[in-house]
Image 1 (cartoon, helix red, strand yellow):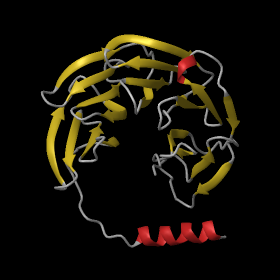
Image 2 (cartoon, rainbow, N blue to C red):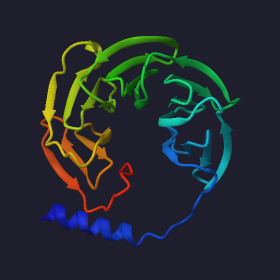
Image 3 (cartoon, one colour):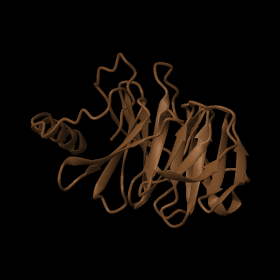
Image 4 (spheres, rainbow, N blue to C red):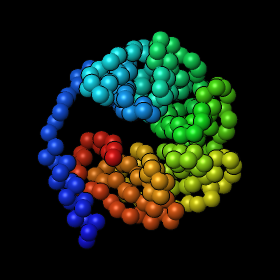
Amino acid sequence: MVGNRRHEAGRQRAAVLPLAKVFRENSDKINCFDFSPNGEIVISSSNDDSIVLYGCQEGKPKRTLCSKTAWISSDTLMQQITVVYSSNKRDDTTRYLSLHDNKYIRYFPGHSKRVVALSMSPVDDTFISGSLDKTIWLWDLRSPNCQGLMHLQGKPVCPFDPEGLIFAAGVNSEMVKLYDLRSFDKRPFATFKIQYDWTCEWTGLKFSNDGKLILISTNGSFIHLIDAFKGVVMHMFGSYANSKAVTLEA
C-alpha cells in the first residue's frame, strides 16, 4: 500500500510539472537521446540523418552534425567528445564518431540485420551490440575486430551492470539471462522467465545504479521493474494509452 501511494503521489507531481522548452531542430522522428557522462550535454539522433547536441545548463542547441551515410536508428552511446551509434541506411555497421570534427574514428561491421541495442561498459572501452540477427557482439573501441560473439534464440536487448562485470540479455520479450563478461561465450549464470505479453515487445533493459533492479522498457502500455538477483517482478508501471507502440522509457 505504501509503495502504491508513493507511486500515485509521484505520478500526480509529474502531471503538474510545467513544460519548460520545446526543441524543433529535427525534421523527422527522433530515435533516442543520451547524456554525456558528466551530464552537461544531451544528444539526439533522428531519421533526418542528423545528430543534435544540446547544452543542459544553457538549455540550447550547441551543434548539429550531419551523417548522410547513416539513418541513425538505435542507441547512441555518448562519451565526452565521441559517440557510438548504429545505423541501417547502407548497412548494419556500428560507427564511432568524433564530435569534435565530425569524422569517423572506427567502424564495427558484422551484424547482418538492424542493430537494436547498444551498451557501453561503465569501466572501460568495451561495448556490446544486439541485433535482429539474434546475436550479441562484444567490441572494444580501440579495435574494429569483434572480441566475442553470442548466438541467441531471438531478438536481444542488452545492458551492462553498473560495475561492468556482468551484462543482461533480454530475449524474445519473455526471458532475462545474466552473463559474466569474463566468460562471455559460456552459459548464463542466471535465467529469469517473465510472463509473455503478446501485445508488446521489450525495447530495452536498464540496471538501477546499485545493480539490484532491472527496468524492462516496452512499446506497450507498461514497463516492468524486476529484482536483478531473483527475477521477481517488483512493480509494473502501466495505465498508459500507447496505441502507436511508442517505446516507453523511464
